Length: 196
Image (tube, rainbow, N blue to C red; front, top):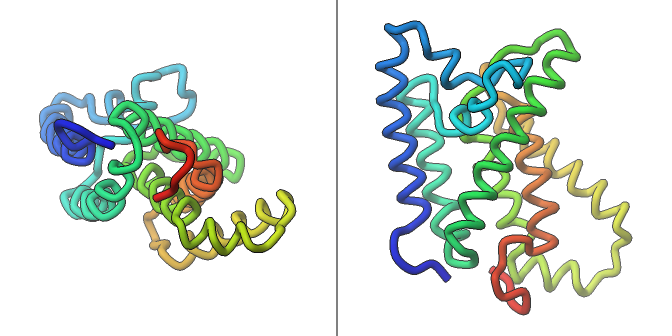
């Protein structure tokens, strides 16, 4: 579907540019204000977007870049650049908001940054929208509530299996769950008669 420049390459380029800008912002004392999504969101609303592209360390940047490369190049073949970027930013922002909101409610709320919520959404989308899944699910009548429960369980298991001490597990869970729902609905497909 994609013609011209790859949205995955564009996103990776933005990752690098934002990472370099972070190193300028740190000595100026602007890192948190410009790149970290924290409550209340209304205080620095631009961080809904900038936090999705920002990364704390080079290792964080490389891990998310690899995840994006693996999932993004597959997903970009089934959608438009606009849908790709909107889904990436939208799911990343939603995952971040969920992380800081639930974290605050649990008393563990801190700022969040990174693309992993959006990348988990890409993973979920690819898991739920491929031909094999369509064939298996299409051959079995599963009520919507059961599908929803299965998606919650899958998202929880994958999140816990891939979690680490500093990982934003709520953001990962949210991204994967939203990606699974969007994938079953084939939300990103331009031609809704076929699947990835």
